[in-house]
Length: 71
Image (cartoon, rainbow, N blue to C red; front, top):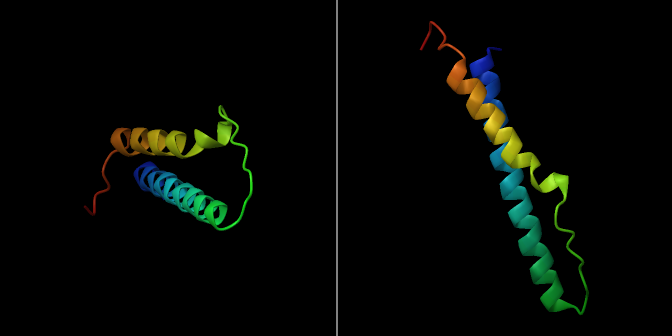
């Protein structure tokens, strides 16, 4: 696996984590309206930065790595 392929893989993981987080937030909000529940959001969580960090590293790897001979 080349660095370029690894970069695109990390970008995919980052975008997938963003979609998963959006789906989870949507589910929590839907569940909150069905039942009376309280949720505490903790701002500044390092896990919120993980998808963006994966995307940034993936872009850096895919931009710096040379293209393979096959493409």
